Image 1 (cartoon, one colour):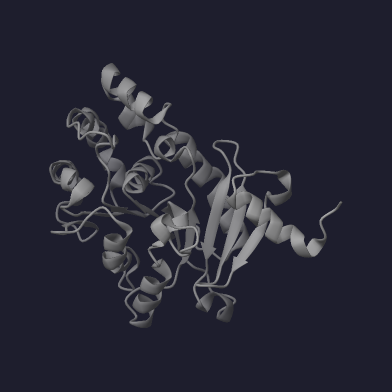
Image 2 (tube, one colour):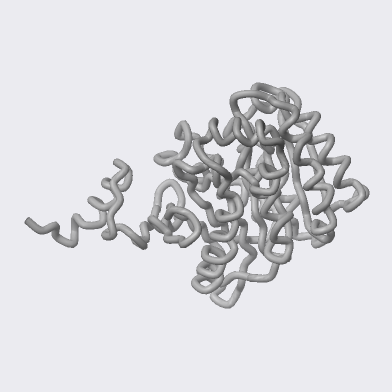
Length: 311
């Protein structure tokens, strides 16, 4: 018995939520009107990594200014940005609210948000290959055992720069140059965003790295892991000249691990930025590793990165 056209789209979406994959839902575009207007591209294909959903949020001015072109922010863990139905703990960052408030106050320029969903390979895709390869064998083996494989960070960034970004630039009115292209995320999403800026400075003009998970492991705070790859950052720091870079962290639960590592990174990058307004690293006392606390301070990195006052 066939499925009529009326039921095909809802059925495909239901099957996807239940974990089924089929060619029938590949490249389907879903338009989410509540709680926010956005387009969800289901199972965006890639030759580098497995397919995943992509959220595309257009600012309200996109349709009213048909000639205007916009900067783009690519954000990791994209299902946590807008829609409570698919976000972690039903607690999205509600990025659109922060953007609209800042735009209304004329603090930032309008921009497009591309939210890249994670999948079962999240930790592997967000693990920087160069950081992993710099570790001692026993540390690499421990991470491989913890996450069930070796890093896919380089392949993930190839997907982002060679497949996703060209698609977005071809189908939406974007400003494709690096000064109008940003990358961001929280936790491991912050780590891969920093790595993305470091490895692709000709693609990205800045990175937002909230509660950056320097230890990589979530089982233990092994200080030898960050210490093992900091020299990679030192060797690559000159690539960051001219970029904008934002870091932050709290002091509670998982965020309590981060201060000594973030201080070391700040020290390493001082020679590049030397007190420049292009670099910001903040510590939030009493704040934790959670979507709620990231949401509460999200306006700070957005204003820093996309201020209407060009630096």
